[in-house]
Image (cartoon, rainbow, N blue to C red; front, side, top):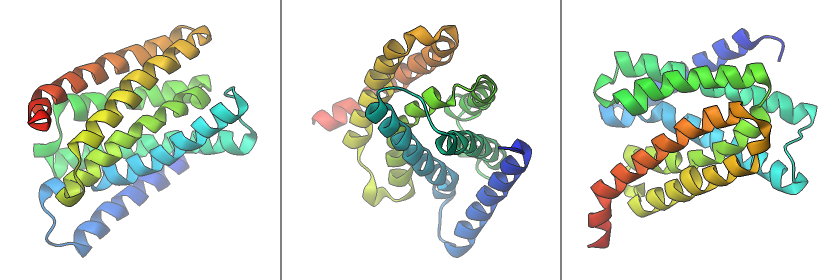
Length: 209
């Protein structure tokens, strides 16, 4: 991509339009529902990206990508960064009640820097394989936006297998790449284990009853 800043600006504008348009067309939305508008858009998009890069990985049995997929991958990371920036701003201004310190501010800021590191080091082809782990985020966002589609079991099981089990597999598979992948993946894995343990404490007993 020749102009990263232009792409980032266009994506940010698109997120802003999406938020205000959906809020305007659905006047009865609660603040909690509005806080998931951007997340739904981002998580579905990044899930599709993750599926494409996983398909390429398993079909080719490596992480080599052609120029078209490479540009798409770089564009996807910029898109993801635009979401993180918008959610930080909108969360602070419009729905601070639902912008959690750890899963919101800290998580977003760390991933913004990680995304820039990935772009700088051209490790996006490996990094985007992990984006299939956005599937639990899709389930969470849609279930929170519309309680009719909420599924705690589906969220918990997908989170465990994609963000912990599959994450560990990818860390082992790509261990030869070096310290950068380990540096990025290990804190994320620890955070995912912490979140899953918290989820089990909160919902585990309910699901067993």
